[in-house]
Length: 224
Image (tube, rainbow, N blue to C red; front, side, top):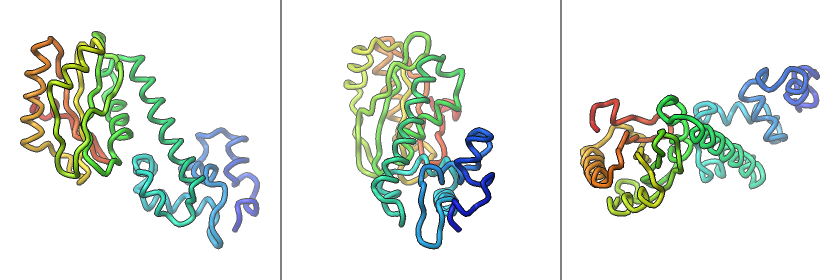
């Protein structure tokens, strides 16, 4: 059945205009983005299949471009639209974090880091530089490694902290393997950076290990 063949109050666009976006399911919102489906499969069914394939809306938003390109029926235009939604979510979260004290909203920090790093196929080491009020100045991806290892140079982190006049930092890196448990190497790196930044009076507040499904705080684990 085509979307236009559904009862008017069941069509995603008409339902949104009549009742607002909160009245729509995740699949209905995706159907509005997709607009068209495939022969024998309308946009609503295709949206539901995407949610099932990637483990819901959160999983879909954390999915990288390469994974989306492999889905039948998602051509360049539809992939671009979905990636644009992802980027808008990242920017919206970044703006919120810049306006608030970072650790008054720990879940927003986790969401932001998952959107930034969770779907990357290679290991990325990033730093959130904070001002004296613990508000976000900027997130910078400083180092990129292989699937299993990243080379991080403490001197470069210190130089960027001084250049940005940061009072504190939050460290973050992803585990493409999907295992969120910090390794011994992660602990050693954290203490090395903590010592180096401490020499210039910049505090390390936390270090998150990020996957597509979670962001684990080393401070909460007592490893900082």
